[in-house]
Image (cartoon, rainbow, N blue to C red; front, side):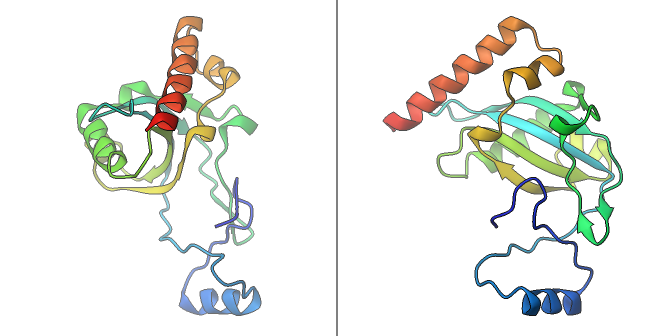
Length: 176
């Protein structure tokens, strides 16, 4: 639960390995256990909802390309900012996917802007909002930087609009 960018994340294959790991590293309330999903697809899905609106939208969808997810018994995160292995896939954003992500997002208290890290096996299922797993949800601070947006070929006006929207959401959430 204290890790970031894959630090202190471990892939354990069975209950025996999990118990051995816990006994060796017995730190109460530190660990989160989740089911492993082999992919091969992993995306960063950026979501925005204005606080007084009932629904939001998917602002950006970035495919992380590196298929080598596991090294030396440790999970290796797919990080776009350290490589050029990521591509913007806005054509994967569908009304069905948006509806599913929006239904999840509106049920998270005080969540208005952030990035879902999602893994899935079948692109058609994903576009239909089915058969994917959310690895994690990163709130406002995980939103793309200006440099990150420039890397995904956003225009200057789109970048300015995004930054103003982020400030606007920040102000509104302080007033709520």
